[in-house]
Length: 325
Length: 276
Image (cartoon, rainbow over the protein chains, first blue to last red):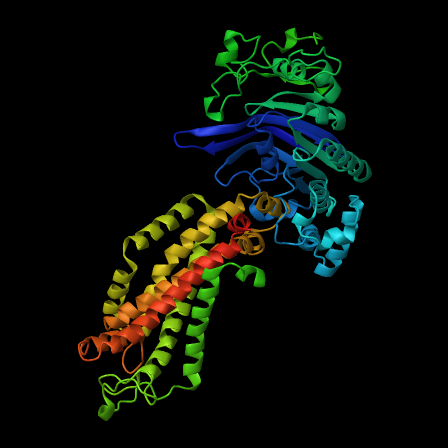
């Protein structure tokens, strides 16, 4: 069953002279219980896509296209209705657990808040439920954590508290925006395992926004690779990672450090740097750095070309890039 | 509180002076040596003595009693004018920060417009249009406070709203009013408290100036500013009549400014960390 169908999503931010397109024609689907990894560099539009799904884009930004969630159109939905969905049906986990919790409010009260709001629980009942949720995300001492202020918890504990806050109302979709970027690698692995476990037991869908291909490879059924506001490639994780049909994805994969590489070997890099939103021309945003650029790449947006098993690549030369990797 | 006061001389002295001002007003409500407005011509310009601690003025009124009772007007004007400033300023500032766009621009431009008139000048304009008196003086000073508080509120609220916890609160489905009260106001309160203290001092000074010009408190209501203007006519015979209210105004304003500075240091964790 399709939980979320995003069709040709655009986000425009008005700037001084003209609107800047931050997300351009994002299209993807998510079934219940499925996990989608959204990968991209800073400024690729991945966070803006996540925010747009929740209607949390910046105040002046304009969202176009279609977002159907549980059969309901979210684009253009009024703020009151959207607010009833946020935190209840769709929840979000943020990157920086240090700043995503209010420093002046006890952790238990913050975890209890969505329950009071969406379930109409009394503060007392919600407080008890919050302690149970904190135990559920395997915080060592949930009673202590509930009474603590955010600064009294470690980074990993705070992120667990954020997750407890997000899953309180049993949302059908959780959007995690770089949930482990600010954490140590070992803590990162435990947090991701926790998210996997929660997804398996509750059947919620997960959108994992990350710049780390390895994280996405290990924890997501499907992956979407974003660059310059465009989803350049999407499909089942193993297909995209093993049989990529997009030069950008391939360049990313080649830029990973490999275990067993000879000492002193240099990492492959992608020449140049990602374009600023304002400098994205009419063509493919990756054209300036791509080794396979044709003339047409600079003048027209590459079309989305579909291959087997829901594998889609936006590249004029996608068909040529077969099983080469 | 002990931690806050330690090593913070401004806060300490400011709190003592401001406390003394409040104590004077409180005492004057129940007791003054003489009725402050009682005219006693035989004792006019009496020098300081046990009977008249600070002497008597040109109409024989007891100066000590007038100083005590005069503090009430200063505090009344300060509290209400700052209250007006906070009430409207915080509301406008929050509205601007939450709405962004045209609403924010319009409010900020309106604030600039009010800013363009010196506060005292607009107070004089208002009192001359609607008649002199404490109430009009309070309104005039209060209106001048609104843009200052509104600008500060908007700026600090914008930085609080840019924090992830504000976004996280929205992501959990909370509305703007709840976010304003639970997440924004508590986090911007220190800046507002400091600014309110400073504005209190400015309001006392403005009230004294208006009363000196005859646009503030009207006789027989005692006021430090009016005492100053009364003293002017006998300045060569009895300069002390100007010194007492002058000192009262100066010490009150100094106390509140020190308190504001001290609170700024005490409430700003960055400054606190640097000191220790």
